[in-house]
Length: 592
Ligand code: ASP
Ligand code: MG
Image (cartoon, rainbow, N blue to C red):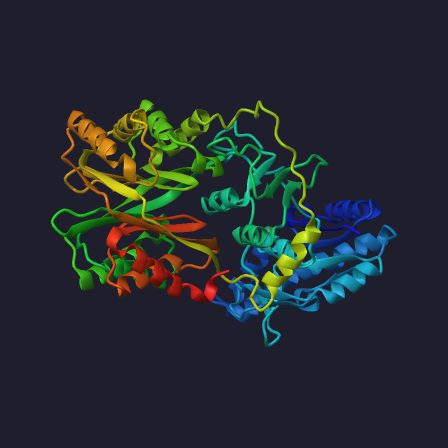
């Protein structure tokens, strides 16, 4: 019999009427011939109210007791849900995290799921019950109650769907699906019928807050199709699956991260280990770093720029100053009035000219790009905060994200879960479900780097450069533009296939001349090392582990970029093989 997991968020169980409505939906699914597991969140704002209550008796409540308290929110809603189903004449039984056997680690308030027992749920389902599981909670080895972090019921739902090999995992919420961007900022945003796990992970990390990131990581890791839909209607919402609705489209979504701050460290020695000294201190403070851009330095010095959440700027600066005391630097600058605009799409990995198109659209609107980083499926630019919303609207329009696809969308069809079941079970054996997993470590030695230095800090420069480069038929892979230094000049580096290096340098020289840049340098012998997997962001420290492994081997980093699913670094070509071995060793414990 098919099995479906239905998750109802806080707003979908906020009142007794809504609980009854959700109950009816589950009963209907059962009557249609499914076994049904419901996962429910705490009613409405219950979790917030509990947090507030705790604050009134203790400003810094012990984490263990906090989890004891917060878990009660879900315990109330599962019990009410079971009663509601009984009142409608059907069989149901509610279970807490502990009763299901959701085993987690012992990190209160952000516990990670290790394993889930399925036998009791199976038995209850076979007896005709609707099983109602409390979301967001589990127990550690010593039977202490733990919670999974705010919004964690999504993660419970997808994890249950994974271990039960459910045919569907439906997430009922107060929005009707995933949009191309935030409809409050861009009213023409469109709901997509389907989006890829990787795209959703990138968008979620950019603050497109439809779902708990960790739930999408589960989806990806265990092939769970996730259906995000409205609890108010029967309309289908958005499927989160491996492939988007239009794999041929370069971009599937766009986002802004408004509250960013930029830090630049100028004139640090360009030797192995400098980035590590700085970033490990930031990681120690649990601050997430994004858009790391490092310049290939002149005269043995490098500049490194990156962004941090605006409210963590002070703490990050403190960490940077500590690091700089050890490695030395010419200066530190920062700016807390910036925002990041990103476009995401699995399709861009297979197309050329996507970045150029974005830069051109922004240039036409006179918006200055302060920094650029690109990865396989994401392009991010840093702009002034007061121009960010406009920038978002412009790129949304440029990539026609508002338009319904004109060519027919291939309908999504579930893979036969039977064939994959064995594979998934094998993957679940002997691992903790939420551990970091690295799928792949790659070495690409077939690329070269071109760097234009002394690039003026004005709108339209990146657009012009890549327009020319594209006109020359060059396929550009990684692009990074550093933040302009105090003298008002930036450095723009990009990688191209080896055989296109001569041509690329030619084009770069022409552009550099026409734009009054300083010089063009290039390196035919670079190696790009990439580590990809699931959990790269939520397990902070993957980039650090990578930097450390390379630094220990005396390998210098020339370019860096990070995304949710991959960290790339460019190193000297001669060090490629050695770097690869070093990384394989550093990640051997988490290779899938
Ligand atoms: N009730 C918890 C929260 O509000 C978990 C959830 O809703 O997913 O964060
Ligand atoms: Mg909630």
